[in-house]
Amino acid sequence: MIEISDLTVRFGGVTPIDGVSLRFPGGTCGLIGPNGAGKTTLFNVLSGFVSPTSGSVRAFGDDLLAMPHYRRARWGLRRTFQTEQAIEALSVFDNVAMVHEHTGGRRSRRRREVLDAIGLVGLEVDPGELVGTLGARERRLVEIARAVVGEPRVVLLDEPAAGLPEEETEHLGRMIRRIPGERGALVVLVDHDMSLVSACCEITAVLDFGHLIASGPTPEVLRDERVRRAYLGTEEEL
Image (cartoon, rainbow, N blue to C red; front, side):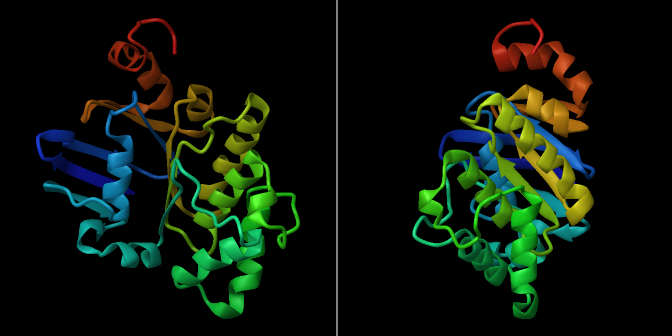
């Protein structure tokens, strides 16, 4: 469970997060909103790249903001980014193993846990293949394998389906739904593909210009008129 209370972030005269309080109870939860709504800023606060002006964040009872970012990774917080972080000159295995090492995974379990993460995401390539030789779908799966290797407690996925065709997005959705059950991790998914959010997330929160405008069961949230207006500038179905 993640509990965020009265969280505010200011950059000079800009306030990308403004007094947000919300709760992600477990499983896979969605975080949506138009571009510039504050979604990635919130992820940056959770992962330690941005310090808030005020507010609190507790994850499974622990004060997340009291931890330096490197301790959060060892505690079990993982994330993907909108831009790829995997190193093209390294193999799939070495990219995932590097995260396993930096997050405190035991060396004696490294090979088994790295291969297990690669298998979980459905990456059907030789683990020794260089990431730079892979296609877009496979590189995206490497990014997620890096986020689920070992013993994650919170996995933040920042637009993992961006640019993928429908069939590959459906595969991605099936894989994301497996993470809580097979890893015991809470997943927070940011994506603009509402079919993916609907398929994966029981609970969804919506940000607009740094404010929380809706939170609750995903079908109800996506029918909310405020969400339709904020997200698409229309009251038609999302």
